[in-house]
Length: 106
Image 1: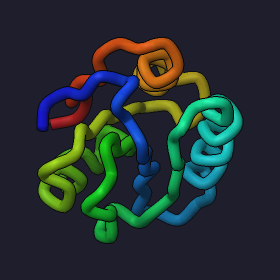
Image 2: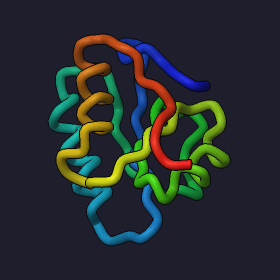
Image 3: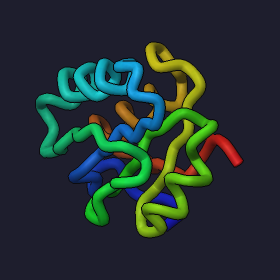
Image 4: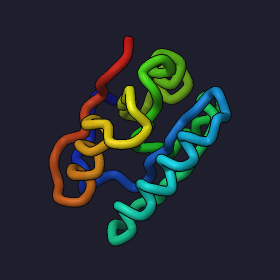
């Protein structure tokens, strides 16, 4: 999958590796921002991304691993855990419609 219409997103997964808590905070922030949408936001290790994830958000250093673990999901890499434009684009697309494309990382 290389893209999905934001209106069709039902599950967003924030994937992490280091366990420092930043990705957990991002998942909580996304739950608040998408609270009025029919979307589930979950947090998982990059090695345990569920198969039903529509969109996976992860740090750009993890995008290759996320893509190999979730080949049917759109993987969006970001650099900043708070205030990253890639995350903001996903939120906007889910809330108002628009395309979410596989982006970021290698």
